[in-house]
Length: 320
Image (cartoon, rainbow, N blue to C red; front, side):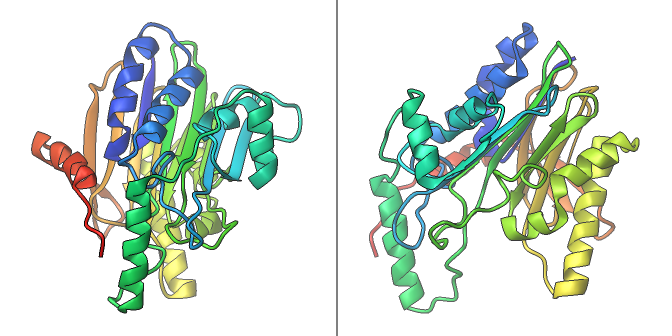
């Protein structure tokens, strides 16, 4: 068995490119890195990598993490600037015996010392988004400074029963400099154990971390839950707890795959999309619609919806 599952439609092309390798016996680690790099390199996806949206000072700070489910090795970078493909740096850090999580300048220096590409990550398009948001906020149009936080997260299983998970994000738009969300935090943004399965999350990091959501999902799978049941239970329980104890819950969306290649996804928002493919599941993009029961209604995305997703993100911008 082999398989791969990823958050958001933006992962489609990257996932698609990895399928020949996975189907031919290639490694889950290579598949994860290749697929996430494709998202990081596409400048029109404004929440990941090159073209990612900046913090309140106009700086692009990127977070990424990589976890090997067979050895439980992990690596992560937080607040790294002007380095291409932070997922590659995170994977390289997972090979270190210690110093697996590096932040800011330390992460940048490590990347440069190990031959990673220095690259300005702030694009002209991202600067227009930044300028326009400042204008909107000044005009008090009811927008939150922090709107926009779509992490690309993936879990892969290869034919050698090896599982890997990875994440990459620019975090909250207009975040405070130095802010780190759930994405590079092992257990919250991602977790994987090749004997059980893996999960990864996207949404409001501060709320996802309150439930250590990815670790909880893997624990539920270890207890015998199907990945779909585990995702639904974890999201529903955390959403309910947050609303009961805090009065509100931020966006919570997850995907998971177990060691058998079975998969699942859940969310507390409408129209969360994800990509999945396996030996038994053709490459498909689904849209999720949560029901009051906590269960999910899965809708196969139409070609029109898929095309419009990209078209909306590539539309010309006007400076306000």
